[in-house]
Length: 306
Ligand code: GLN
Image (cartoon, rainbow, N blue to C red; front, side):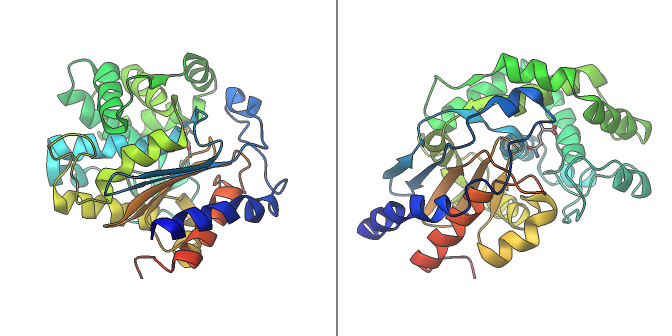
């Protein structure tokens, strides 16, 4: 496999060059639009502890909704199955920041990987964490084995200043009784999570626990139980790329989680975690180059969960 990984990665840049220019970086959060759209990186971290990188794999970018997996993993660890009484497990089929679905479903978010679901999950986490922003940061630093992971204050501020839709979601959830804490505390915590700045290699390492039944990648401990890891992977497969999850399952066939910063993390259970980054997004908010690179990698290795 090792030689294969290197050989396949060497071909990926050529494949993504074909889709360059087809999308555009997110601009509804102004700070995200300043990114160099020609960047591309990919990193792999295998369960036996080997790392592979190409391109801009060590350059940091805004992880955005990829943070929703960290949030869910922490929350599920504390509250277990009870979490799913307040957040569903069905694909949404609607945009990640949809308000209308919340209305006709009485304030129960479809899943933890759309904005409304992550706001409720953040609310649950606030019940358990003494210093939420610091505890969350420490959790991610531990998973990536990198104390040099930080929040990006500029991105945080930009999200905050343009966060009307998330604020509306939060108010709406609260009107249905599905938010317990102060709205300003939840939004603050949520925007900080989204603003985390990490590289492909940081993320590939940090997500390795989902490729190894919940075992911490760098410590002799469990991040989540084996069953919880399976549940998180299932949710990534069905809901991790919003209303494009069907297309991802069809073309890539791995649990994936994307963010509007252009990153996508994918899990090959029992083998490796993969992170790709390309800032140009398609209409549904997923990285075009990232999706193409994952599709190519899976085709060449012949590995998917199917
Ligand atoms: N911070 C972004 C938002 O709340 C995250 C969305 C995403 O990455 N899909 O809109």
